[in-house]
View 1: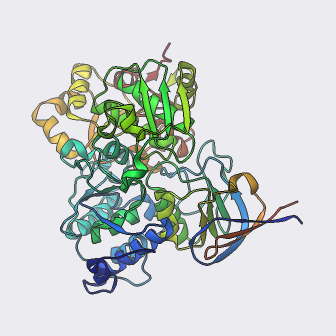
View 2: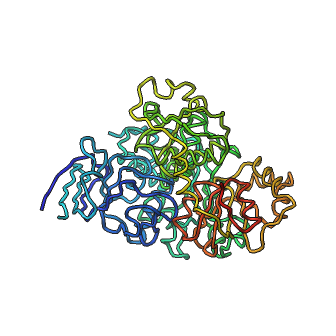
View 3: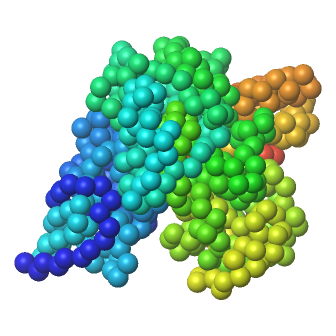
Length: 140
Length: 428
């Protein structure tokens, strides 16, 4: 299977792997957009509506919407449905709080490649939050 | 590499107690995630705390000390709750229910009591109970260059864009830890160099009313490239604070904008060159009437239909708007079986009481409520509704994540008309 390695900035150390869920327009931080207890995406119009974030590597361009963004992901963590890690094209404050609060590996700030464009939902992704390396194994 | 002052090191080392130590540990991790090099002093904060629904992951009987330690301080160990930093003016943001009227919003006394208990615990820590998402109406105004945190996204845009203060759209854990320590990472909007505009927005549509500014904010937000600072120019009449409140709230729904320059209004953008720092913009977009029409199709369901749940006041209304509502609704009655909720903060409601506005509004059968809103109260408060009208793009878009019934959007007068008729009539 085709493999590719891309590199960003390691934002929170540690290794994580899992199937990627790509959110080209991010996930809204507004109340009800992410299930606080079941970790399911309920944002109307989101391409991943109805999918659970549990054990996945979430791939986003940035955060979006309410400043409650981090709190809904933290609720999901405490409820036992946390994602395995984060990849973001660029870090921002909403996402930074979510990463720091969940304390899970994250790679951000890609300068020569946009992870949104080279990772597809369902690809197997390994991230190294210490070195910033991301290894993508395409699903086909 | 993150640099700490002696005071920050002392907090991190536990010399000022475990409460501040845990908050500082979070601050350091947050700073490292962002890539910040130092902290800045925070003098104002608003906190989205109390029995908020993001805490539904805990059992009803769970001790607040455990919840506060784990959720906000990110600590596995239960920490004795201490005090907020004395130099930081801290108050509550929107609440999970009206403090006195949970029965009018279909919430239980048990839930209200839990919220009161959590809020009282925060008050003992030095958090003032204000319960407003528009805190500038009652005195929370960071001045130009002042570093703040707010858990209300529209308040971040207002404070950055129209007061010239410095703040990021962080999140509740960061706001709580900043309020406890008086420190937040000096990063993003806290640094002047990052505040210059790099995306020109040409407004080519008519915009004048509060509702039009609301739809404009949403439309700009959905067209903006990611990770930019916009600067808006156009042939529009100089807007005032209520219009900017709606604009700030709706641009925050459809984008991650933290600062939006409007030339001539924004303190840092009295001229276009001031907004951009004299550099050319990397991006440019136009907003036309067809873009506005497309937005309206996403915000407001098509056609006419019966409605029984109408909410006005997202974000929380100003006193002058309560006056306007009282004058428009005086002598009219809302249709039986229909609810009209009018939201403000309790300090503003007290002024509305004194001025007779509350009496005139409530004589119609509507309720003037404080501190919360349907989105924050969540499904339990509105699951009985069969058709809704929302004043506020943020509410009209956000409530769609929580319900499948028809949602209509209109200005305050259209909302009142719909409540009186029990029906939404499509606007021509």
